[in-house]
Image (tube, rainbow, N blue to C red; front, top):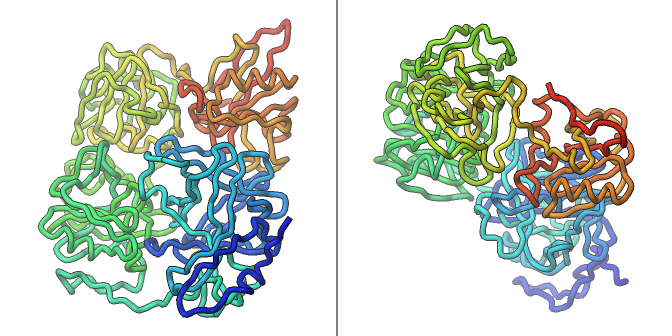
Length: 639
């Protein structure tokens, strides 16, 4: 086996004034430690930043780049063995957290025998200075063969997580799969490279590592005005830009874009002022994903005010401004009243010196005097009350917004309908697709119920949208109750769902008897016992809740998992990440399955082979136990 030592990568390469790629093939074994520097000059937020490893429980390490502060820790003890990245006993795999919308999968480090990721070291030219460097070229995923790419997508705290996109993937959004180059940096250079990227020190790898990207001071000024475009010394949601004033952080529309008249992109250098200049003459402009600018004269249906803290991407062209986030726009309106912005790590709020009656009506806004809201839906809004099973406050079925309740609540009963919980939208299309209606200024739960009389289900979404249906379509599953946080614009004591979340009701159901996200396998000799946490969601204990055999299949179903574990003689079977099947004869201490309805929101991933079934979640197992002969085979009771 040929070994490649980083100190000798370019020993025989001639030094030239321009980058010339040697023709020799490098070994797939690098046995002296190294770190990985990420490059993509089109995205300054990640360019020349180190790949970080973040502990995720069970000994796993997730890959991140950038972040405020950086997520995880840089690692200079990586090695490459037969094309597989390793760090001690863990190695790089592509598995879990599959995103069916973008068709991408997580890449991370683990001890498990999941599908391996293969790389080869190759020569490349540094985009910053045209010097020679060595990068890891992605070769493919173990089960998919050659091809595909490694990319990153926005995550939390301005960080980006690593993903795998298979060959020929046409489903990805460019903003959700940003290609990256992975540069090999030797362990000996660790002290000369800060976490955020290379310093001005010259690498001992000579031409094989990147040099410093030059930094120049920039004056951030609008092309249309100089009165308010001077760079602030404090990171802020800029209150005024030229003739425009800040409205808040807005979601994208239900279908398409919130602002759809015009768009432009500048990922390397976007500022709020640049977007304002591009949108002069329009009523609204908004900055999204850090580098996207949108203009329009109306804010399209479904775009509503979100928590101010959701807009957390720093503008690449001005580190003192925010430029929205994923599916969140930093929204401005022409000639609107000035909005003062207060932000902290724990809460955020908006206040105004006027009623902002000219701004678009939002189900979560407390800025319009036309809404009888007692509190705004900022990140510090009042927590929802516990659902009561009492019917003493039941109101009659009508479109009236009158109510006998005096506290904000998820209304337990409306006419002949009972509350099921907070549900996601379906995998494709709407969760309820038979009928719909809209009333953004005045929606109430009662109004939606009246519009849906005769249907089995109704649900309110985005504060002002009402949907009806006789079935809940595939992929719509129970979510956390707190996700449904939008207050009804027509009744300040009721909740009306949220973005992509429905306040769901069922005809004639009893409180707590909702269809729950698990599969009834009693006919197959297994009972569902609850949603059980893995190590990253538990306080202590071993890496795995079930320590027997692992079986993985992109077309996994609950029945397939039960059959496999039963054939291996195991008493317990659990599905996870939509495609994993874990077996065991006992459940690890401290990992007892949870049996509250709320806990089931953690086990809501549709199975890869049958989206009508549920196969656990991210580090949560949908746990089943083999029924004992002579005993009743029944599922757990949930409260």
